[in-house]
Length: 491
Image (cartoon, rainbow, N blue to C red; front, side, top):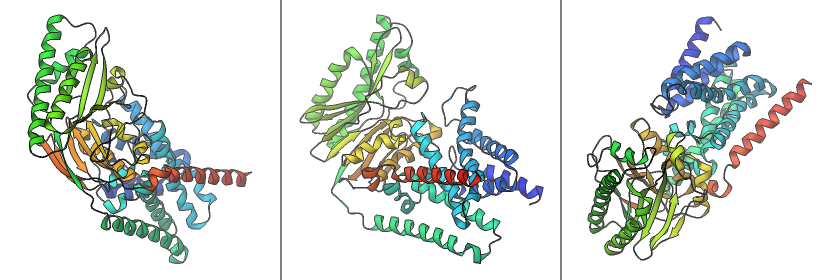
């Protein structure tokens, strides 16, 4: 291959990589980017080609992750360099191992290594499953149904396998006598996944529904800087504390009165955004008693995003989802398990890792909070318990509003529960157990008051909830076997 074509491959691969995850995602880019990066890496000696592949991915990621990952300026290029290295490792494995397998089997090295990389990242990274190419395919609901069987990993495998298959065909000059078996195998796999997904959607049973509502954040009522005063280092003066109590009370009044109106309109479950109601720890019991009285009088269940402030020289915050039942009062108070790395993690008290459930009159309810939803292995515990409806207080920033909605929604498909997600800032939405959006409101595009949806109840059993990351472990075993075979063959 001449130099100009090689340069074109690496540049086009980098441009397509920009759209594979982050600020601007284009589904088809995830299928196409590996074709060009693989073709380049195969045509250039590894000592030169692989560092250039890393550089292409790094350049794309520096732009794609800007404002998406909340990292202080000096650390941003370092963290992105580490992310780019992880994304390059499947290309390294492919370059070193693809010749160890005969024929079309060589095309399996890259997708297998890609799944292993994503799986290892999801298990070890403080950002969980961020970066998985499976999320780029959210708009393709038949394909997304594969998550109910394999989790993210089957989707990522199918996408990466396409790139390695096309590259394999290019390297064999599209000779059908060589390609026939391999192309048929991939097409059969793709058609099977798409048909099965379409059938799963077509035969999804419509269960009974319940009216749910999200109470939006009251823009303009209180400035964010006012809340931040409560988290400044050092003790508060009595005057400052009294002023903050008054501010906190006005927000509490807003959410209770807005919830009362929605209860009168017929909603049975209401969800408030993450940390939207703030209280000092010493005032928490009194507020919870007020919330119980409201729930009982309005005959409505409420999940409150509550931030309880522990005062001291270094204030701490208990970021909670509190479910209040009209007949039993507070039935659980869940502490966020996975605060966002950085400032939030530094000031937050973390939970023990157990997500709560409650068997209500409407079905089995549970809660997670915002960033918790980015960790598939953590949320899977709800699928194992046959959850009907997950109620998720959340809060995002504009650059990730759509992306974070997608990450959370995939958990519904994996585990077979409906979800209502209430975002303080960002996308509030309701989705069913098959990932179909029932209602959606973007706080950055409108000034919402309420997001209402009729949500179908009824847990849907999934293979992923039962067996977990079996497909990813299978890929890990397969990659290890390929590497061992290559090593023994070289001896």
